Amino acid sequence: MVGASPATNSVPLAQGGSRVALKIIKNLEKYREAAKLEISVLEKISEEDPSNKHNCVQMLDWFYYYGHVCISFELLSLSTFDFLKSNNFLPYPISQIRHMAQQICHAVSFLHDLQLTHTDLKPENILFVSSDYSLVYNANKKCKERRVKDSTVRLVDFGSATFDHEHHSAVISTRHYRAPEVILELGWSHPCDVWSIGCILFEFYEGFTLFQTHDNREHLAMMERIQGAIPQRMIQRSRKQKYFQRGRLDWNECTKAGRYVKNKCKPLKKYLLSHGTEHHLFFDLLEKMLEYEPSKRIRLSSALNHPFFLYQKGKNQSWKKDASR
Image (cartoon, rainbow, N blue to C red):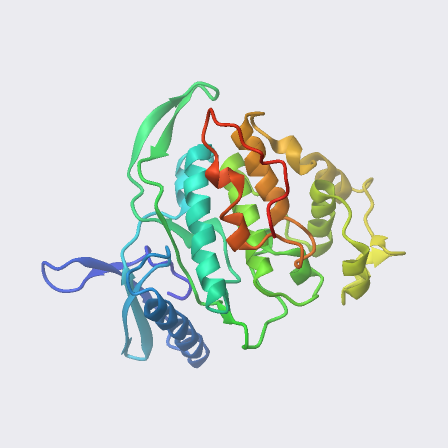
């Protein structure tokens, strides 16, 4: 199954042995070639992280079977998206978001240190090691919700991961997590992963997608509604001038699509669910991850030192100073 996550299919290694996840690639040459590229990335990860400390899924082995490339992995559980879906899209608690965010940032920072960009970060590609849960009463929603017992996660699906020296495709990332520089065809590198992480963390916090669209122009209009005007420097350099008129996004708020964006989207900080300190810290981090300019977007090495990850209730934090970039 092309694109199947390592949790999708499992087979025993041997009778009575432990179970593993098996990714089976279609028996077509173009898919076999893509699988070889993924295997080279997975081998690099295993070589650089033999103790599995960096929250990336571990490849156990790979082999051919009647023309199919088969890759075996450690067996994981539900994706963060599937758990959210099974929980009626009720958001994760902010304490669990902090733990998951720290692991995701750590994993992707490790990839960036290896001169790799993941390019397809999304909740479906972040899997729980165990998705066992307890039922907790949600007083605000007046219903029971599932609370995952252990929020340890692994990053999966390196089929689109690209080394810095390799050819960079013009279009990358699943639509909702696609950075502005990709849409504007300005070229991309590690910062596009950071934008995707910002979108993912927002989804964990709210229970819904930040950019729910399938159209480039509408996507850019949503960005402007949430994060303000796209910088002129990016507009001037863009190969997609058809989206602009006189240096501004060509967008009519009076159309059906315009009204949809106006009703669907609002400035980022208006999505705050609480005015508690840790929520403000979280949104400060999101603002830095969702910075338009890739060169100004926070690096993950700096993000990991953001006060959101250092926050402890009851202790004062001088967090309003900009985190080092």
